[in-house]
Length: 188
Image (cartoon, rainbow, N blue to C red):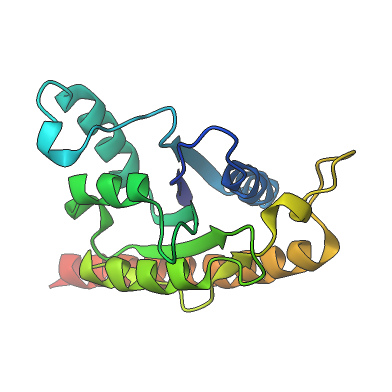
């Protein structure tokens, strides 16, 4: 199983990268192959201004296509997910088809980005992908990690564990069904 994490934040001083790296580390400890696409490093211009960047788009598209499942990590900005993530999603379509996608959102407030997560799940459906019903919401991101150890606090650790358990079950169930379909077609 290969999981690609798309980190949808490019702001200086961002905090959402902490949860993206935490999820990547947790998946790695479960022997899941991971890839992290950080949109602060792999910057895509606005879709209409994309002339001359075909190489970057192709590289990111290939990384997305190689994934069996994806995780989208985004902060909530003004009640929605980040513009940089929306712009990136606009570049791709086929790479998301029939793939399970989990959503993790962060916010500085107490609701953990619930509005962003709900809207993002609707977009995932529009992409022809399968959104995981369970979401990882990280409220008060500035307090989610212990400053001295950079470890996630116990409440969020437990939520992340449950989220990853459900995500991996969901992703494996879809991967198994795809494999069964391929085998059935080969027999026919």
